[in-house]
Each structure stands twice: as C-alpha cells, then as structure tokens.
Amino acid sequence: MSTSKSEASISNPGSLPRRDFILLPLISLLTVLAMFGISETVTRTIWAEGPKDSCLINDPIVGNHFKPSCSARTKNAEGPWITYRYNECGYRSATSCGTKPPGAVRIAILGASVSEGLYVPYEQTYFARTSRELSRMCNRSVDVQNFGVEETSPIQVYRRVQEALALKPDVVLYLLTPFDLERQIDPKELSERNAPPQTHSTKAVRLNESALKRLQRMVTESRTMLVAQHVLFQNKDVFLRLYLLYGDKADYLRQPLTRAWQKRFADLDLIIGDMAGKLRASGVPLVIMPVPSRAEAAVMSSRQLPPHMDPFAFGREIENIASKHGADYVDLMQAFGRIPDAESLFYVVDGHVTGDGEKVIAQNLSAKLRDGNIQAFSNCAPGPAVAMEH
Image (cartoon, rainbow, N blue to C red; front, side, top):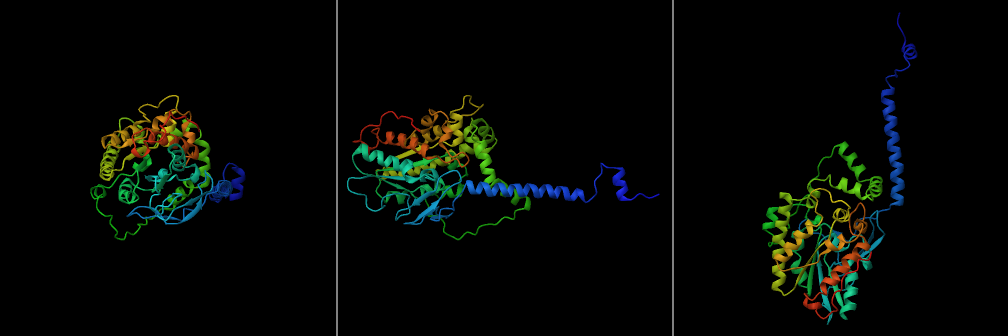
C-alpha cells in the first residue's frame, strides 16, 4: 500500500519538505542581508565620510601631488570635516611658496600622509603649531612649506629634494612611519633613484575578482565593519592581539628584525644617505622624525610587554640611519612612550595621528629645533623640557 508525501510528513514530523531545504537558508540569507543593509544605512548616516580629496592627483610615476591653488572639503568616518587648502605650488601651506620673506626662516617638510597632517584641521597640525610657536619664541616669521602627500614612497620623497631646495629652505624635515616602509622598494627603482622618473604610459591591470572575493571586500570595507572595529579596538589588549596576527606588516615590532625589514631599512639608508648628501652640498640641515604607529604606542603603554616585542626598534633604526649621515633626529618614540594610553592620540581604525597627537609632535619638534644644533634657530629661546600635555 503506497503512502502519500503528506501522510509521510504527518507520520514523520521531524522531516521537512524538500523545498524547505532551499527556502529556509534563502530566507536566512535574505534576513542577514536585510539586517546588514539597515546597519550600513544607519552607520553611514551617523559615521559620515566625505569624498576623496578632489585636489589630489594620483600619479604612480612621479608621485602623488596636489593641484596648485586648490581647496577641497572632506573627512574620514572617525574624524571631523576638514577643508584642505593648497598654495600656488600645491603644498598644504598657509603661505606662498614664492620668495622667502626677508628675515623669515623657512622649513620644507617632506614625507607622506603623516607629514601632510592628513585628517587634522590645519590650525591643529604639528607644522602649523610649530610655525606659531617658533615665530613667537624666535621673534621672526617661521614659514612652513609642506610637500607631504599621502601614499608617497621614500623614492618619490627623495626625488622632491631638488624641488624643496629651490625654495631656499633653512632646514628640511622628513617624517617617517612604519607604514611608509611597508611596501618593498623595487630594486630597479632604487638603482635608478637619481634618474628621471619614467613617464611612459602605464595601464592599470584589472584583476577578475570572484563573487566571493567581491562580497568579502564589500563586508571588510563596509561602514558597519569600521564601526565594529572602532568599538573593538578601543580595548588595547584586543587591538594588539589582533594587530599582531599580521605577519610582515607587524614585523617591525618583533625582535630580531626579519630579513624583509632589514632590507627595508638598508634601502632607506641608501635613500637618506643620498638625500643628506644633496642637502649638505647646499648647506641645508636635514632633520628626521619617525612617528610611531598606533600599535607601537599601544605596546609602549602596555603593562606587560608581549614576548619579543620592541616598540622602540623602528625609531632606533631610523636614529642610527640619521646619525650615520649627519642628520638631526627628533625622538618622538620616547616622548610617546611617556604618555599613558598613547594609542588614544591616533584614530582608532584609520591609525593616523589626531589633533591631540599633533600637539605632542609639535612640542617635541619645536624643542628640538631650538636646541642650538640648527643655525637658523640658534638665536631662539632654547627648548625647555617638553611638557606632555594632550
């Protein structure tokens, strides 16, 4: 005697109709997507993010730069709205890049996004604060011309030295972070660092992403994920535990240094050696200032140092390079290391220095420039012991 499907379902209540094995997962997936969509809408409203800086020109050959006499308004999700203004040379400076005013001291700043003061209002940047402080302490105008542009490699920084020298600066400042060395320098590019950059056209290579990869990227780059990380990473222990899961990216913190990081510092040694040589030939002193990452700052202020971790290793390597080539060195590592919870001076997820962190940089930079080693500031009031306010 045959049994109908409905009778079988009744007699075996634990079984499901075949269609439910498709419908139920589909309903679950749609529910998750709907919740994610709602979450993304809410977080994008509360954690607004502005458009990319419209003044930025991405040039992989000669390096990123800004349009002259341009301004743009934008923000990152964790920070305030900021108006960026660039002078007639495309530098983030409040003054003209023309002839240096009589009696003024001029500082030219090289580097990438931290040099630029990315995501910090102009008046709160380390260079605007330093300019104001030195102008007051030295009783003369201190003009700052900032060449800093995000995603600028050390080779591209080096190739702007002649451009900086054309402004007749009294000192050149170069800021460095671990992120600036994260990408290995191409050996051919390094060997041709003194040659003009190649200007042949390059076509971007489009890689075919699988649907799963696109979905993964959509989730990891979502505002919902950023907000979740922002909440999670405020716990120092959790942040460090997750950050240290990175391999090569976090190896600048680990001792002994890996071969890859030793190579990065060796390449930087060559670049800074040539940079210092060019500046020395023109009678312009070079000041090098490494800025710690948020991870370094978190390790510095941890109660217990994780095994084989040295948050001062990056600064020590840069100091050795600076000393080898006769450049002055600003020890921000020790300065940040004396501040409790120094990681709070950085944007939690983005990792750039906040306005409060810029104040610490300015205090130490101003004191260093007034310590008597830089001729242009020799008549200024000497730099006192720096009070760590933030």
